[in-house]
Length: 323
View (cartoon, rainbow, N blue to C red):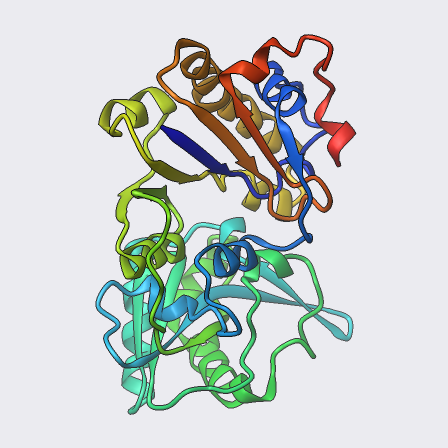
């Protein structure tokens, strides 16, 4: 079995803590360079979409069909002097009831659009037509940045109307009264119709990210929600084939500069994934472990087989070495 891990932000969190099992895998394995890119860019390339944009909205919806969809994720826009700063939903909580109520209000207002809260913090909108030139950036990648000029013209009217409606919604009055950020805007990105995706090389794709699961579904791979740890994942995985696991738990705390949370997440990944997979590699249960690090710049992929573990002269180094 070949287990491929995708761990965005891994080297950006390098200073958080040591990870002995991961450090050994990286030191003993073979390195391959690649261009630095976000998770969405890595997925687009890995699933061989070519020049096609990543239709994140259509891949998030399980039954998108031939319709045009976009992600319309709830965000909080904070006015700081003359700048609008984006706060993604990962920085605050939204209940399922709140997400449903706000999307219902948006649907009553927009006659030709349909908003759907796939998850409380991940919304989609069905479009009457494609929005050319809409943003391709996940709001997590814009956390804390000025976005007044970042929204392409294609989404301005939709967003402006949504902002006016959300600002006046009593649910946001209640949130502000409790000291919580208002859900006062949506970030529209990843618009388009789901393209035809070539067959993927992986028998299964495990992830929490709905875009990764949607790509797997379109490519004919088995889609699985992410197991809590490698032990549970190994129990339900076959002995042969290639399998992709997206471990993106570092992405939100890194975007929000939460160093304590980064440390806790990296420690959990080491305990629950890297150390068990190193043990499985030593025992022969896994034939190869590959670690992909989107955003890692050079040397962003590391392939390790059992025999590589005997290369004792390649001593493990702290993750900061690869940053």
